[in-house]
Length: 137
Image 1 (cartoon, rainbow, N blue to C red):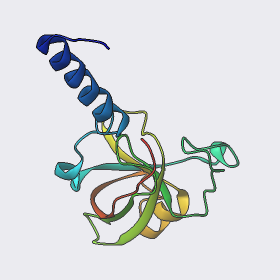
Image 2 (image 1 turned 180 degrees about the vertical axis):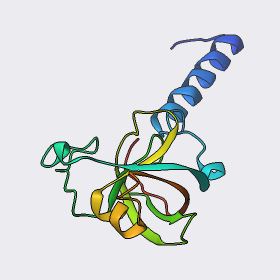
Image 3 (image 1 turned 30 degrees about the vertical axis):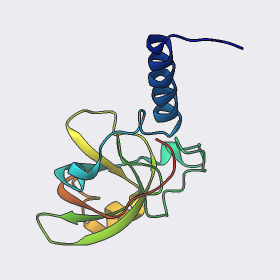
């Protein structure tokens, strides 16, 4: 029979709690409830990405309503509103980006066309989370 000191038992319990917390996914997942609405600059993908894999593994298709965001979980549905025209579109986050730090979201050409930002290439937008995705970050 093993005998452990009270100090050693306390250390084992604390270590077990830390491991359980980390394995639950909570340690790696940021608190995103405060980011439900954001405003910034939207851009859109060029045709160079057509057929390539997105960060979540699906094949990129510029004719679909998808987008890249730096932190929202894959599968999150967001409503994007063009602040100049009030045009809106809903897109699903399936990629990471934009690469340029001053931009908030990269849209497919289909989504950019629906918002009316194709000609300008960029547009000031608001994004509102409609439904959080549950795929890993």
